[in-house]
Amino acid sequence: MPIEEILKEAQSLLAPFAVAFTQPEENRVDVIISPEKLVEAARIMEDTNIWYLSAITGVDHSSSADTTNEEKAWQRVVEGEEQTGFYYSGVLEGLYHFCKGSAVVTLRVRMGHADPKLPSICGVVPSASLYERELMEMFGISIEDTPVKDHLLLPDDWPDGIYPLRKDFKGFGQPELDGGANA
Amino acid sequence: MPETKHSDKFIVPIGPQHPALKEPGHFEFTVDGETVTGASVRLGFVHRGIEKATEERTYIQDLYLLERICGICSHVHAMAFALGVEKLAGVTVPERAQAIRVLVAEMERIHSHLLWLGVAAHEAGFDTLFMYAWRDREKVMDLLEQLCGNRVNYSINVLGGVKEDVNDTIREGILNAMDYLETRTDLYLKLVTTERTLIGRTRGIGIMEKQTAARLGTVGPTARASGLERDIRIEAPYAAYMQYPARIVIENTGDLEARFVVRVKELYESFRLIRSILSTLPAGELTTKMPRRIPEGETISRVEAPRGELFYYIKSNGSDKPDRVKVRTPSINNFASVMATAVGHKLADIPMILSGIDPCFSCNDRMVSIRGAEGRQGVDWEGLRRYGIEYYR
Image 1 (cartoon, rainbow over the protein chains, first blue to last red):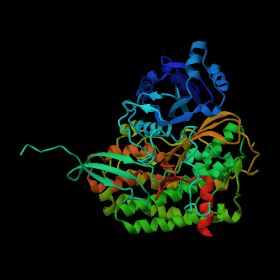
Image 2 (spheres, each protein chain N blue to C red; image 1 turned 180 degrees about the vertical axis):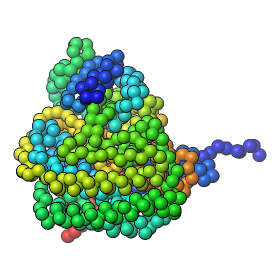
Image 3 (cartoon, each protein chain N blue to C red; image 1 turned 135 degrees about the horizontal axis):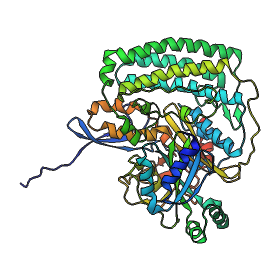
């Protein structure tokens, strides 16, 4: 099946959940959805048995600095003002990449920085557990119903509330290599 | 005395100093007698924060950094990143460069599969095979050194092409080595399918059905050993795989033996691809001009690493530094399959099942945190540089 048709089929599957579609590259379709519809959308994809979850990427959009740019970016893809408002408020994003052959369908879920929350899709895609743990520790996205909430990559004694992949994390400062003798 | 019969689980911790692999990972296996009833994984012992670090470096610096994610499949990391950045920049890389990238990628696959064959044989207690496989692996390592200048972290990629060209001496050397390795591979294929002591540890062990493999999102040889047709070289050809198509290697039994057979048979496929590339290497330039600043955008770059699909998400913001680089390595997909297939097996089979997916911990874990006397210290770039200078003074 040619890639356009594969992507079209996925679009029609996801139409009930999507706020908007974009096609950034010829082998990719991005689907903007709201967090509450994520699980259902993931279920639809998984039930086809042809798409598989390849990765979940977290992105902190706050580096794009001035919010006006952000707003414009989202106006381009979301038609209608009331929806623009919703997306404008969010700066963290979870990208759920589903692949089939060279086609990639990305479910994009946006959240506010203040209280980012996502539902777990582990009930639908069990292998999402590791990615969800990564999202939680690296971006501080709270995923209430995920089966395992322990750190995956960060040390056990990593301080609470510090999320290294957020743009405002700048490290713990210069280490003292020689006990400060030659500092 | 009240009834104290409790259902506390007996947990066998394995690692971080791992018995099966010379890399750190921590596993907890819940056992009932000798039978495993549950498994969990804890990674991050070699996490180096590379994803974060890429955001503070230029694309050129990142190329070197990302190549060091893994010491075994370093080339595919650099290639995936370079392909992605080139796509964002809208640059077309010369055909010769793309062919050389594939050439090195296939040589890397040979070295990685032979390395794995050795490690897995060692886990099975078959050290003769381990030594044979590693001795033969040296052939490829030497060739890679001749071609790229380095045995590991070959660093042949630049953004926009490759650094090194293939000359006649190297071509001869590679072709001779392929002939030699092919006869050796005949032996390995015979060994992994007929040697009694090895089959005792592999046949019927760690079986993963095709459906399970698909549901768990396994990739690479692990998936292909369960009959799942997943190979990015074929599904979504990149670099020069369009000109030099790879053929998929599939086994249907889904046990450890199938994982041995798939990897050994993939060696033949690599020999074929390498010969084909060397006989019809397109002429032309090695590099093309790359802009320093990459236009705003985001892309996904997927390549077939020796262990399976390697996934890069790159977001650029118009500057000379990326906004976000996400690396999803094949091992993380395959870990889920270990956790699932381990259940029901004897504890003694676990090291084999674990090494069956050819896990790579460095790939999964990407920050260093040094636990000093005063607690944790993070190390930044400058600190690390000073530390290095001090250390070797």
